[in-house]
Image (cartoon, rainbow, N blue to C red; front, top):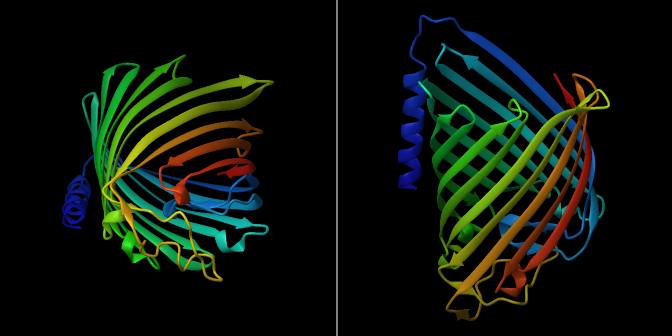
Length: 323
């Protein structure tokens, strides 16, 4: 908690310093998006609880977001935004989710580098009840090593608070370094990143460290006189737990969640999880305001703990309105 407080203070201080009056020209831009679609999921789950239902279902997806960018000066920029995502399953109402997310970011250009700070606040609802709140504060920088090669190191401190599962409340620290290569006049890029995540939970059975690697390929192009974008990504991380709950049999109450995290009777000396996530999406711009987005994702969440070992594939198609 102390680390998050310090990080939030630093991020807020930088935002305030960046917002000091400037004699340069100012500009404010607003943008908004709304999406509606359907999804098919092979194994409905709650990733934050590492629990899967073992059943497939379809869902209605509704999303909306609004963002504001203020170019306070040639070098100084502020961005802020709010979004809400709603997932309503056809037969698994107890897994229905709604996620609210708000953020504020301030950055300053120094030659070929940009330094910045941001704060995020997220509220997740599960089955119409408050489920999880997440607070994050981050310091980052972006450096142009060549006209087409950039690196972005970042340090993020966070705090998770669960409404029903307080033993999972945690302070988090994430260190990351991402590299971006742009080519074809910026229409294509490759991103490669390394991450290290440390999660210190109230109950040590849920504390872990997780080094990871990620790769993303993106290409924007015009075909059939329509602007399109195709992206592929892969993420791999390995979680090493401080202590493991040997709980291969999970009991649940009528709501499906009350006993998911009861203290186990025994413990084993170690637990290791390997998370592999693959994703592909294609965006087809019908015109300047409407686009069709299709996506497919697959997650392999392997664990030495039986109750946390599962696989999931999800496909979706959405219509997006931008203005």
